[in-house]
Length: 290
Image 1 (spheres, helix red, strand yellow):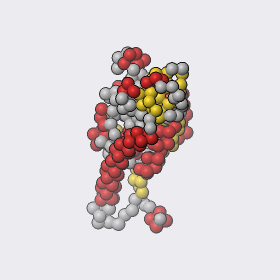
Image 2 (cartoon, one colour):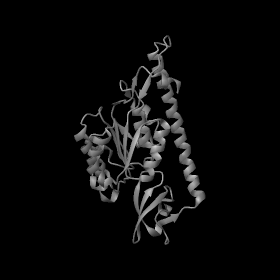
Image 3 (cartoon, one colour):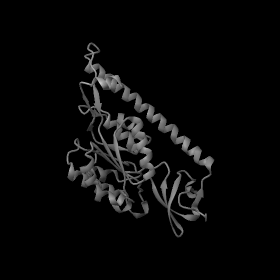
Image 4 (spheres, helix red, strand yellow):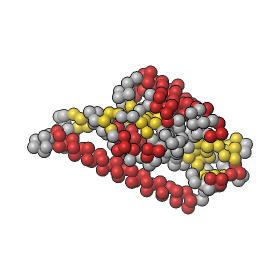
């Protein structure tokens, strides 16, 4: 289809418009696309693209919003339960009057997509998770991650953006067959040079169809995508927010954590990891009154 413009939302006719994309670049008859809801990057012939009508866009958007709200409410329920357990412990079974404060783990979120970064930051704020967000192109991430860690000193690091596995370029174990996985792998390696211990800096890395095994071997605690499927833009947020809001004396149950994501264990995975939240007493009187 001619007349395609940068910024338009389109679908691929050959895939029955199953995923919506934003047009980010046009190179002759080939168009570079970023997933509108999924962290997928793709190239497509311009004649294969269909500009999506507003009604179609809203229908797709509403489907994802329902899933997002479901994940959010499930997360909040678990968070409420953890806080109630904490109150029970600190007050010796509610027999003592004692207030406490919490310091969630701080997140450095590096994202290759500025629109996704904005969306993720809004969800972190909604969940009450402290975050420092930075937009960096995937290929630049290995070059800048170390200095950002030194500056922000996070408890948790997210390295994400867009990716894709291209079957025509090699097998699943061939790094050359992935659009951006090598940058995620290299960024994780650089991060581990700064903070080598996995419980001192928890790392999530990856995007749609990323080389899961290579990212974990590089030193990440969590990664995508075990079955090379697409992941939702917010999946990394729910994974690391669970870490941020889990007490550091506890380990996060992997299956419990993955239930908060939109794609589950087919799209996300990782290793046993401690939480990052720390509790303290006493609470200043001014804080109690507020």
